[in-house]
Picture 1 (spheres, one colour):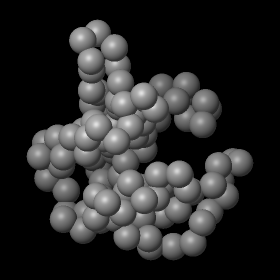
Picture 2 (cartoon, helix red, strand yellow):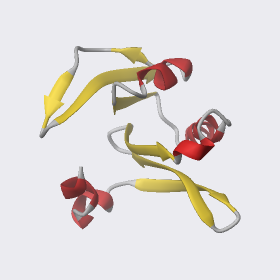
Picture 3 (cartoon, rainbow, N blue to C red):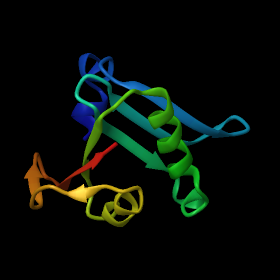
Picture 4 (cartoon, rainbow, N blue to C red):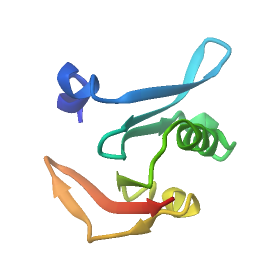
Length: 107
């Protein structure tokens, strides 16, 4: 994961949006517009289940003209993505030590 976030050439391909509580960054979503893919999506644990993630997602969807969107969900976030309308499109994958579930949502 660190190799991804510290790779500026990869990070420069993303549009990154944040949610703030005053001056504190409490949530972030990074999307690759050309691939129509969510690469980063995190909300601080203290702010879970308060609509922050859904608001970030809804904002991105209103800003981008996607026909679909994909994500490699962590096993922890699978239920959250399902609540946003994502469906599994494959089995769990292991890539560089990270387990993920490929998911997609048609718009």
